[in-house]
Image 1: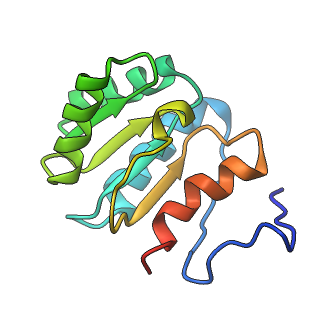
Image 2 (image 1 turned 135 degrees about the vertical axis):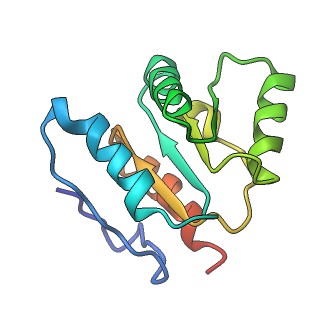
Image 3 (image 1 turned 120 degrees about the vertical axis):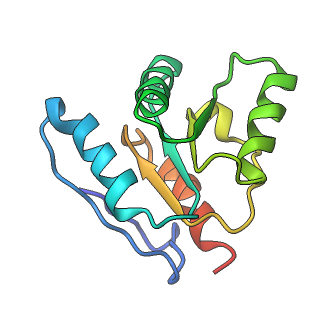
Amino acid sequence: MVQVDKDSKLSDNLKLHFFVVRTQEKEAALFYILRERVKAGEQTIIFGATRYHCEYLYEMCTRSGMKSTLIYGAMDQRAREDQLFKFRKKYVSFLFVTDLAARGLDIPLLENVVHYDFPTKLKLFIHRSGRTARAG
């Protein structure tokens, strides 16, 4: 259950959808979302719990022909900037990130955020989800 109190308001422009799936079905649910629910040309950030989750999901997407990239905190600054550039210029549609790597990313007009691994704190949920609603 996600409960947002009056001090932590989500934007009225934000639309939330959720899937309840078994652990062994998470990858299939993610691929369903990325292939069937995300419209062509839309950009999506997918939040994973760890660098290893992000690398695994990135590799799966790449092997299935989806254009994606990833950013995690242990990357050097130049590598992060290069990957972010690809995403901003829409050379890729999907960006896999950890919470640590997502701080300070400036991505205007982001259409979708997927919480592959749910955040551990409400503040992180608002920070992640707010990226899609700030600019309307």
